[in-house]
Amino acid sequence: MKYTFSLMNRAEASAITAWRYEGPYAIYNTPPDDPGSLAEMLDRGSPYYTVRNAEGQIIGFFNFGTSALVWASSTPGIYIDGRTVPVGLGMRPDQTGKGQGFSFVNAGLAFARKRFRPNSFRLYVFTWNERAIHVYERTGFQRGRVLVRSNERGAFEFLEMQRGGEAPLPTR
Image 1 (spheres, helix red, strand yellow):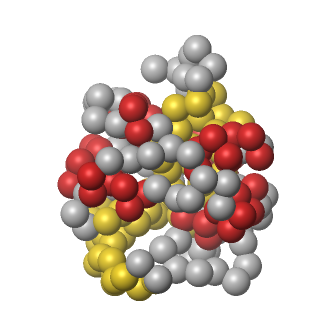
Image 2 (cartoon, one colour):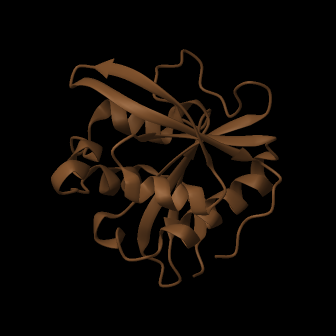
């Protein structure tokens, strides 16, 4: 599948904050047009990219750098721990669970490899989200430590996953 990436603009960020996930995935919902979420999504220090399919429809996003961490960072940036690039991502709710995750994640990693030249990638995923973990493992990420993070909504467990930045991307 062919995807195009562009720095996210305000209209795209607004559309994405209106997405609504169901069931346990509702944890990914943000209040529509939430000023804090919009500011983060438009901060070029740790950028968000809109992902479109071949028909030009927004089907997801990637964010790279400190915005993908599961803890607050005082200074936005692309790299942590040398040249490690944290990765965050989301697919439009009606696109999830349709077998597109592998190609979507690989496309995002290929884009980031060219753009940022990382030594490695790191991402964080809820420990209960086995569907996403399976996709990440297929794209070369390995399971690491479990972190507990708390916010106003409660305490949550995240699995830290990492893969090499220059390692070949799997084809299936």
